[in-house]
Image 1 (cartoon, rainbow, N blue to C red):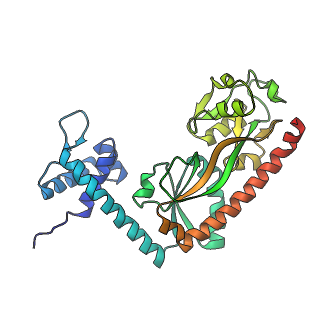
Image 2 (image 1 turned 45 degrees about the vertical axis):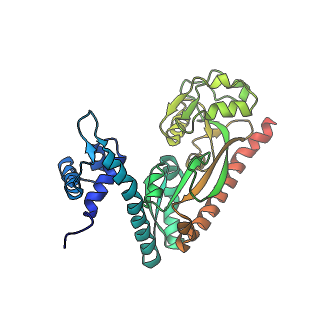
Image 3 (image 1 turned 90 degrees about the vertical axis):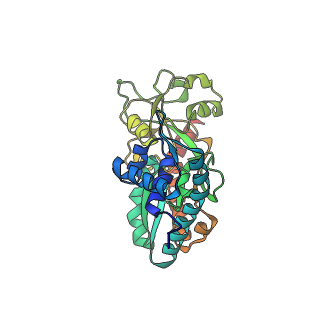
Length: 312
């Protein structure tokens, strides 16, 4: 009997190619050489009897037939992945697949992973990503992301509303003393991550100051790099709970007089599906996460509160 469905590995290669900017990038994602990846695409095209990609231009594009095929096959493959992950979760696995930002992973979550495994026998399979497709496809169970809840469409639990405290290193690199008040901030370099955007503008607006002071900011790829630069005396930064946790404990960042200003941002945990949110393993992790976040937030407030009262 002639088989009715194509090989799964060829189908997975097709989906990766449809989502990636190039065949080479797609091949890297699934750990194949470019030639092996191309053979899988050719196998699928021979199986369905139609060209799925137009290779005539500078970049490979889906043909009309390929776009139709992707629209129908992608949800089916995502359902297979979710069903498989759910079944594994219900049987033997104590592994929870999480995606989050680099800064939260390095600065807060990874140092707590040994305690999580010791207390709850939960092992985290941790990846760095802000791509919602990882949840949609079933390749991740949950995500912990900061922002303005832009990842709409997923069930989520809010963990903490974020506020910012002005910080610097103990000494500035140019030999100047750190500012002792907001009034002395002028002339000091401002440091910020590329995302979320305009954090300094929001801070100046909230403080009732001229936001044009934030027009010249040195940007870094991650918040972790921002704090490293600030701790080295390169400039001023805005410290927020969780992300600044290790720098505070190691006394590498010094809070400056002024209140903790709300940023209209939060950290939330997002679930691939409502069923994922109800799994016992996930619920145990969420309870642990909420406890740890609450403890970190209390430490952050205790660290910054004396100077906030001093500024008042």
